[in-house]
Amino acid sequence: MNTATTAIAATSAATIAATSAATADARREADVPEQMQAVVGEQYGTADVLEVRTVEVPTPAADEVLVRVAAAGVDRGVWHLMTGLPYAVRLAGYGIRRPKQPILGLDLAGTVVATGADVTDFTVGDEVYGIGNGTFADYAVAKATKLAHRPDHITAEQAATLAISGGTATQALFDIGAAEAGQRVLVLGASGGVGSFVVQLAHAHGLHVTGVASAAKADYVTELGADVVLDYRTDDFTDEQPFDLIIDIGGRNRVSKLRSALTRTGTLVIVGGEDGGKVTGGTGRQLRAMLRSPFVSQRMTTFVSDETAAKRTALHELVADGRITAPVDRTYPLDRAADALHDLEVGNLRGKAVITIGGRS
Image (cartoon, rainbow, N blue to C red):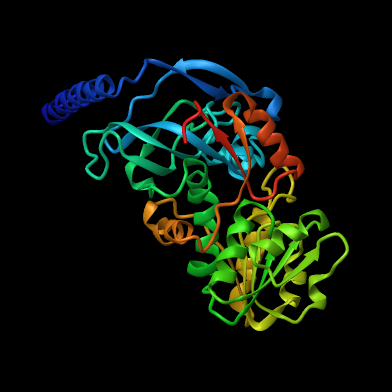
């Protein structure tokens, strides 16, 4: 080890020590315990692999905050991380044989109880929401850039639906889909977490919305603002007037069929795909659509969600103003997180499930 490296190592050690001391002070001020309850899955599998355990409270890094979690959203991404399916999830760095992060959960809303040395936008006591790491727990760490201040008139349960599902819907519809008032939009998977937001946002911005869902959820999708609701089992959306924009969240239709339902210059945004097999999931269909797009008049695309908080400001303002509703279908206590994930998998939910923690709101 050369002199420069030794100096850097010494400086890093001093920084770590100072950060640890600062974190310890913040913990004492906020009365944070050393241990907590968390939903843990040590191996990949169904919801049956999950159990509530006592684990250590995490320590925030320099660019992170520690949040006392009041509510945590349940989404399809959490299901993928629980099952390790498709296998591409494991190859993406989440653990080949077993999860690198055994505590589940991404969405969160709660109270800041400690901040890292480099965090300037949040202080102890702030009410926040956003995306964290291992949020099905009493406490979770989150990058400061992935958090936003929670408005007073949005509950923790509502806020816990906004970051992943709401943020994805906003990007799909506006950033990627370039939706404009007066256009016709088809929403496949309209009754799910992302779909519930897409339908509401499209309606609020003056688009004509056709939603595809099960017959049992048709009334719900209509209440969200859909002008037309089709039953995916019996109705064929290609029989409708062509659409300017298709937001495909369900991921069960061939690209050729989707193209046939678009106008000549329409746009297809593929958000998800659940039926593409255990290896790649729906990513193969997404790739095929993107490769074909440059050679046709229609635009076909997909995207990786931007998790930064800046993308969600307009969304939480719409919720705060009552123009759209955070689609909380059911709440579950921490010890029933497995039930929430099961209900998500079998399609029992309309909108979002939320895990409530410690009776806080």
